[in-house]
Amino acid sequence: MRLTTGIGALGLLAVPTVHAWGSLGHITVAYIATKFVKEDTATYFQDLLRNDTEHYMAGVATWADSIRYTKWGRFTKNFHFIDAKDTPPSYCGVDFERDCKEDGCVVSSIQNYTLQLFDSSLYPWRRAQAAKFVIHFVGDIHQPLHAENVAQGGNGIHVKWGNSELNLHHVWDTSIAEKMLGGVRRRQYQAAFEWAANLSSEIQTGKYMAQSKSWTDGMNLDDPIATSMAWANESNAFICSHVLPEGPREIVGQQLAGEYFEKAAPVIELQVARAGYRLAAWLDLIVDRITQSAQAVGSEEL
Ligand SMILES: *[C@@H]1O[C@H](CO)[C@@H](O)[C@H](O)[C@H]1NC(C)=O
Ligand SMILES: *[C@@H]1O[C@H](CO)[C@@H](O)[C@H](O)[C@H]1NC(C)=O
Ligand SMILES: *[C@@H]1O[C@H](CO)[C@@H](O)[C@H](O)[C@H]1NC(C)=O
Ligand SMILES: *[C@@H]1O[C@H](CO)[C@@H](O)[C@H](O)[C@H]1NC(C)=O
Image 1 (cartoon, protein in one colour):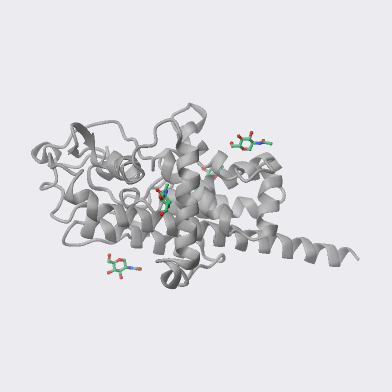
Image 2 (cartoon, rainbow, N blue to C red):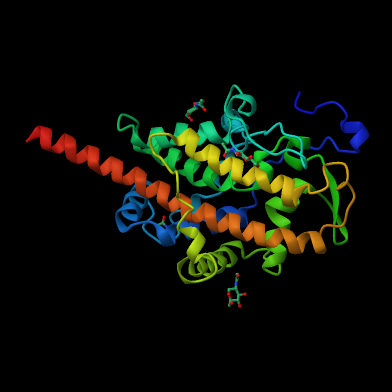
């Protein structure tokens, strides 16, 4: 049971868990990463994923969501998030021992599938699958409600969005980003491509130019857990400041498409930009290491 006591009193709904950063977010993250990876990295993953177009990452960015509710993919259902058992808004923070479930979480999964990419004994299709998981989970971890336990990452919190009633998780996965782009139904890839181009230029020469230099600080391929725990903790901090600034009871039934949206939009933008930039750096590190070990093996053989 994941629903904790007091849910009824909070007026929270027991809806099925739909832990999934919307497709728009994932595809945009993938296109940003595509923009920033080194040429060798692009070649490596185009080869592994058997797609030599500029869509090689974007095309697989939502695959992990497409299999999670299938019989085969059920084992991955907890891999998309880490349930920080904090108490927003007074205290935020993620603790790996406390919050990662026995069968895994987004932090352990980034490690698991990163290590699989190095494992040359695995068939290429297994390593391609690992790549798809890494591309997806680095996106997920940057959505604040993927690093929060309250009401199943906000899935059980009912709010107003314009004339609709939605759950809070959905608002952060999808609604905020779509509203920022003026609605994107049916043209997700095109919208994501344009958004990624904009955010990439903000990183290269615009409002993120200065701060993006520190986005890869502390990134350590020898310690994927510590690396992604820092991302999770940073993401979770927005729970206290922007997602539940007055706590989980206060937000129930509130209209979020107005002032709340205005404050949330810059957070979504920043997190998508960070996720894409970091994904690129992480994939670069992976390919550097694979190339180095291949060279080492090569020179032994001489
Ligand atoms: C590459 O991926 C894109 C997006 O999924 C797809 O439309 C295209 O057909 C793929 N190309 C190849 C050669 O597989
Ligand atoms: C690691 O990935 C494999 C292959 O998908 C999976 O079977 C296993 O459960 C994962 N391990 C953990 C600890 O997540
Ligand atoms: C990208 O930036 C241009 C120019 O600032 C803007 O008109 C457009 O709406 C933006 N598109 C997206 C998808 O962010
Ligand atoms: C995690 O974030 C909290 C605030 O949200 C901060 O106090 C704490 O130092 C952070 N811990 C780590 C390990 O970064």
